[in-house]
Length: 256
Image 1: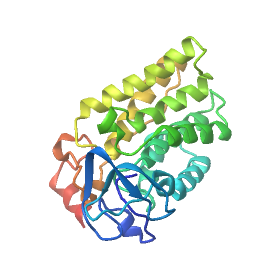
Image 2: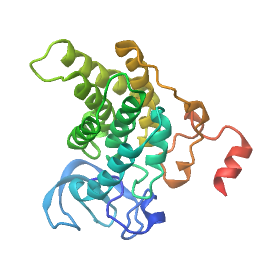
Image 3: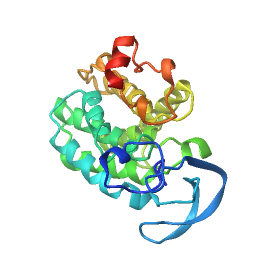
Image 4: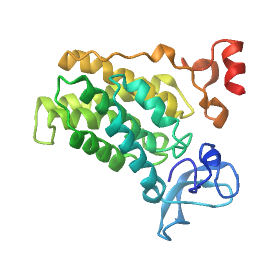
């Protein structure tokens, strides 16, 4: 289950770090509890709900968002993965915190590599990387098992491009290295989990590795990013984050 526990058609509500049904706070559990998905009715073990018990499974929560982000990735023209990722994260279907950010990372990075041209990345590969990221990401498991779906989203890109599989040598190693380096960089950011920050961190690692492995230099402009998502939830790192508004004028403008 993602951070926001129930789907909503209200664009403003979909952007808030709270339950879409009752507005209650999100609660994380150390031991699994049995929940019934309010959308499909499936009963399963979960670690996250709102304080009043509202719950929706990962499959239902991410279904609509995946199609929206896939379309954005396919039509994107930018070679700057940060620019594409920011547009994706601004979509009203994307919550403040959630596993949707795994396939955002994959879609933004792969579309940038496709647009750069030298690796001959296809639309089919963009979609494949997003599907792999979607499959491996599971809500709350960054804290429960140390497995960040955003880092996995980046690693999925390297796996698709390299043709990695369990029986490969260098390709397998390079894919795991992408996962390890992205995870280490995200861990260095500290908590609580801020998926907006972590997407940007993983993309930074991806751009560095693209240059190292394939001599592909993407035209990134992350220094232009001033995050406006800090208003949406309680996971913001504030002044610890490189993308938090740095001046009173930036802060005033974003609060308006």
